[in-house]
Length: 503
Image (tube, rainbow, N blue to C red):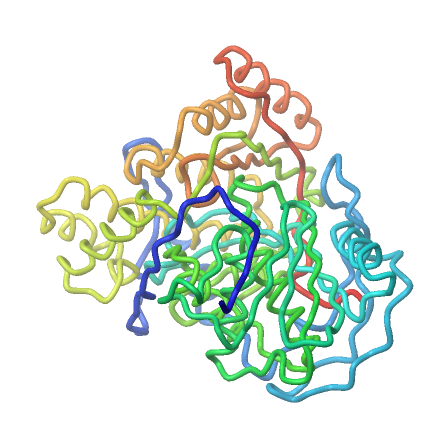
């Protein structure tokens, strides 16, 4: 038996092959914001700004590893009602890929750590009576705009959150990877050499499958994780599970960095994001895109990340809402949220069918000027709606990125609302709790609101004047009470640093 885990109630996930994509450069002639059922062209100045920004994207190359391993000072304002702690400790700097570094002495100063890192270290100490050798942290993410565009090779604009997953590690005398979580029962023992998504004995189900999938993907890429000894990994999280804030990807990125760091290996953040996606697609069986992993690994304080998911180029764009007397309010609708099911797969399949019908590698290649003609060539009405959402959403991402660069944050609001309308009517991925939250936020004074995440539950984000935050929160709660929904959770977030070693 290669792997052992505690009994799980979750059904077995299907193993899906990763969808191969053709990487080609596409040119966007124009873009637009959409409101309601209509489409309005963006201004020519906005188009020029977008074209200028597209020509100056910052590629995150394999030699630029500081973003993933060098710590960054965290913002003094993080999450309302949460105290996640300030900056992480410093790291010696970038290392060559595959280069091993000496193990460090156990860490004892935990004062600047994010709270999940503190709790993970406490778990390890309680279990072993010793200090952890290393402690890592990987954040969740919220997507400002650009939903279901990533697997269509389009554009997204996520930001890393101040909360995430902490991972504390210590060496073992055997060659197993043993994982425990403060949010789940049971112990997952992983024989890395025996992992195989195609065999019964080589799979781990439930939450442990995410950690096992990462170990499998790293092994398949040639990284020796347990050649010298095994490792205990203690995890803890403050990302709301099932809220569409990438709790599973934060776990995977934390485990990946912890396993590599403990083995003395360095992998570039973009390369690691691709490996984590492989774990999610081929081991866990969830056909997700690349955005969540890139956001968690590349996150930057005070910035959203304009990501071209075809080239994997990342351009940090300023997003300091407080400097503009604004706040990004997150409403956890408490509606169930699950991606490993047929709904997500159907949307992806419809998008692929649309691209095939149009003779393009991906929907990213459908331009604004081509859209009307393209839709006329698609017979299936459902596929037409899916295509329309993806193409218009790509346009909205470009316009929001241009607005952020110009400092016109308040103009972002209507584009958030237009995105929600498109997800509700064309992509059909919202649920009543989500729609009520978005509508109530706008009625209560939000500049704009939209669902964020894969859909069918999760969170709504609202761009709000700082003085109106309490009124918007109250308006959403009142609407939920009127509809008999479970009371939502609300919090304000800021753009924060990505995955890093904190101890």
